Amino acid sequence: MTTDKRDMPANGSEPRLRGCLQMSRATSRQGEISRESGVYWVLNEHFEADFNAAWPSAVVCKHPLIRGWCPGAWRPMATGDGLLVRVRPRLGRLTRGQLLALCAAAETFGSGLIELTSRANLQLRGVSDATWPGLMDVLVEQGLADPDRERERRPQRLLAPDWRAGDATHAAACLLEARLNELPALPDKLGIAIDAGPAPLLGEVSADFRIERSAEGGLLVRADGRALGTPVDSPAAAVEALIRLAHWFVESGGREAGRMRRHPAPLPAWMPPVAAPAEPGARLALGEHHRGRVVGLPFGRASAAALRAVVEQDAVSAVRVTPWRRLLLEGEGVSIAPIAGLLDDERDPRLVMQACPGAPHCEQASVETLALAERLSGRVAGSVHVSGCAKGCACQQPTDLCLTGRNGRYDLITSGRADAAPIASGLTESEVLELVSRRRAR
Image (cartoon, rainbow, N blue to C red; front, side, top):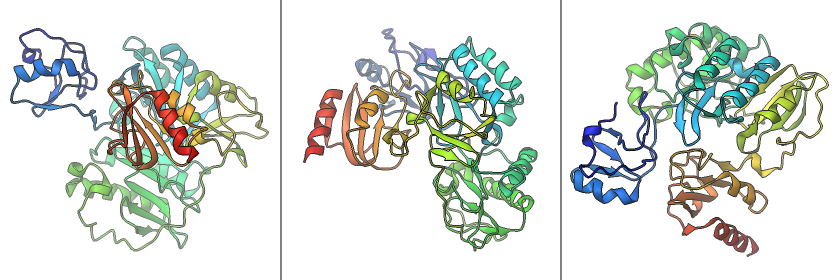
């Protein structure tokens, strides 16, 4: 898709459109309108009248844009604070040297901020068009990005962070890695969870095809959205079944559904759903761990300086990423002293509160989110979501309290998602805090 300047209004209005459709390499630029299937995205209110006059038959959508694809290293996403570059550590693990290099790269080529996503990826923010090539040189050199652009876009593989070298999780991941070219072209957001430890850890993490441990102790392959899976007798058999399942997904129309959970087709006869997964285990707790130490990232974000301080401890040999805003520091004798900018208290609400980057980091957000979430963290009980817009990227589930940005102010929602009907609208930050305090005092 490309932007067609010939469709601009004759009066020469040049809106600054936030949230224009982004497909392939198209970017949102001042004075340009992006479109897809005849739908124009116009989020600038003062320009709406001119737009309607120029295209009376156009469909105008003022809702936040759902992009439908995930960024990567070779495919960064334009945001309000520059390019967002997502790094997928191999096997969910970075060596000491890799993380130190990543911290240096975040400061040299970006803003110095590193985020840990709900799929255990690391994100660098504030990268520019000019600095991105240098960043990619570092990522490829350090083994943090595949030199093959197409291979880097293969489905996300998420490993349970408690794997051991040679166990079923590690073996299946390595076997699948060697056979990635056998997978069909799959939707961008599709993911694979390899979670074959004694007790599954990733059941609540977004994934479409799962390799897990069954309640009887064997291995199984399970399609997301199905309660039962199919038993297999080895990691190699699990990978073979997963590849066949991926081909069936495409051939049976799964690309149109986008995700396995939304795909209504009955499973193929060769994959009978007869085995229940094992009871889930507990996520890694903050503090001492038999491999070293687990630390938390407030709202899933940390500065490169804070992460460097962690890794510069002599005892830390490697770091494992998790989908729960936690890092597992590998090494014997890792210090358990507090580290500025990181969390060591399991009760800290910033481990579980949901907040997207907000403005100015996201083009579609009209409000700041993180500062408000920080101020709310000691005042609110229950689940909380602060969203810069109605998309609700940080959390798709209802929360006890949700604050959604709209036109520079906040809508307050109870027991709902970011796009639900609010009980109060147009609130300033101080009004939000006052209202929350009054509700708490009842």
